[in-house]
Length: 467
Image (tube, rainbow, N blue to C red):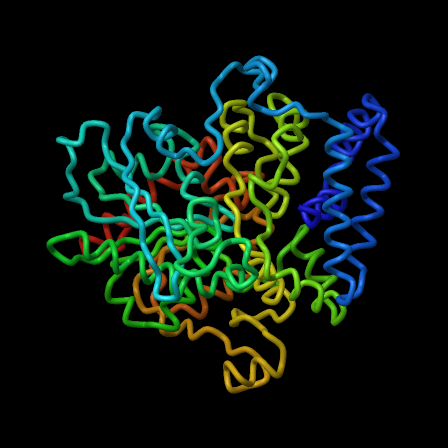
């Protein structure tokens, strides 16, 4: 959570700074918050030797600040009017079944165990009337983005969310959840309190999680068929890591649709660039240490904090929860915004963030840098190898935007030049359509999703002629 506050302090807009100050002055906590910020900055600059002691100090300081600011009020003991200005219901705490059912669809819960022991939850979206189930169009697997979950795909609601459009078009739709998010916190021998549990990045999510989920889905069908894959953000990184390491999975997939793909990241902007600029020899040691923990989950955020600052018309939490990808700033639908705040982020590991920071610094799409000695032991070389993108041979459709901080035009061109079989590259040119808008923009159906349906249908027919 402390890292999120560092990003917030460095990246919020001027009007939001003023809004924070007004909030704090109104409860006479301006001085307390300034002291808290000082503690956070001191922690970030501390040596590795004292980092654990300082981490506990900051956690204590944050808890004290939250208690002083908001007392013991929680979401559960506040009135609906106080919780939500619009009066609409919030679907919170990761209850995707309630959310999907309210949209007129059904959901199945499937458990997948990876070869390295992680227990994943995979959700299958079905029509409201199960006797009307018809999978004549094929099977589609969707993978969420950075710090996301299967919730991300359905928050737009019926007639808008991509999974529902796919179900309506007679596809068998599966939503996976990466290790470490709120649905996939299990392991056959470890607990999430164990540092060893969090020693993974999107590399392992691709090589272990995604491969296991693909195998599982194919085993559910009497007839083994190729799947269509749709990934957003980190989901694209995971797929590219899988296919470049285990090329045989190219034969198990019919196509890959990459939304705002993260691979080459040398040209990114925003808070991730800020973190990369701090990533020198000293902070690298600190970040590597912190890599054995989760990054941030909704459960880590005090609900009384969210209740006071984020619900209804307030804008403050659009920044700390979505600022990494400059998304969520212009969401006008209060119900949608509230459900995003209640269900996002889904969680993940610090090493996932660190791996992306390494890509920013290196300018390469490469494996995790463990340091020279460990690299030599694991990879047989002092520097991490790059992924063999020439082994990603299946048809790939890319959807990007011109206003994305994380998946920039130049970096996408670098990816395109390394892929042997790109079939389409569609650029959304609406102003301020950014990284998270591929899953949460209210016009994403018109700007992106209908075209995706056309693309995968054409690929299934053996053509990519969009005319």
